[in-house]
Length: 387
Image 1 (tube, rainbow, N blue to C red):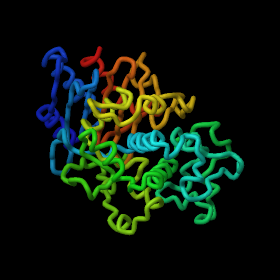
Image 2 (image 1 turned 90 degrees about the horizontal axis):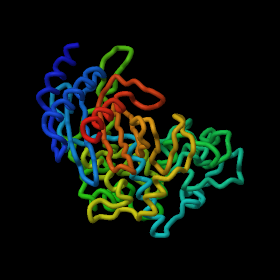
Image 3 (image 1 turned 135 degrees about the horizontal axis):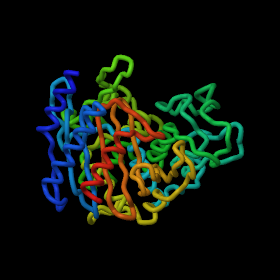
């Protein structure tokens, strides 16, 4: 328990925040005290929270460690690998291509990805871009998802295992392979390498530092991620989260090697940068004077495409619609978890507020597929900043 006593001391002394009109520093101190208690109760190593309200960042708080071994505090410009929240960047980029007339959501994926994509049990049923974006394609991750060979009939003998028994479009099942395929499609229709496209057409226009290519970023800003081993009751550092993959990139083949950058989970971004993406979605495609998507495209991403996820919620295009984050509120967003990071990105499109919550190591507990820590932190932020 010596480690967690030192974390507690740091959390009391190293929180950082910016604030506009939250009702005074007294309430902020009370809120931060509750956040720190929640961290200690869940053994959280570090915590970044950003609150958004009415098209602006309303509060930022950074607690605990970026680097546990060297006792380096978490800072506002640190970069997290945010895991599956990354999917919305892939979806946003493809909606830009829809707007340009390069693709349409109901287009046959086989015509775009470079090989035949058909569920062997339903060989006459088209699998579409919309189905991949909404996890209703009938694909699964049984063969893995780090190479497109796992589903290419000319490359893999057991390609059939990558499909479920039900008809494409009829049911939801979360699938990372589908989003790595979507990243490949983006390269083929745009002519730009996936990671460069995201930077050039989403991040740079919004003034956000980040990206999918580890080698293009300042590695000193990477937040170290720690997986909690429940058998040993210890945290284990996960260096593979930021693997540079230089050899794979040197041998990169456009329109095929895209999973190297993990369109399904590989974005590296700060919590405040992710909050700017939240503002863009809340404003139906624009942030400030910068428009990333048309209002129609943004609304499509946030509209229900799948009626029932594993948790009983609804799903749009890389965005989930749920009532489980805050009692009585229907929120739109996504979660992510990999290598020890646990990220949450949810906003209320009706009341125009939202929270980005990211931790780099925790003794995780779930309630109906949602991390209880995220829900507890969101409840504290809502109590003091919104309610």
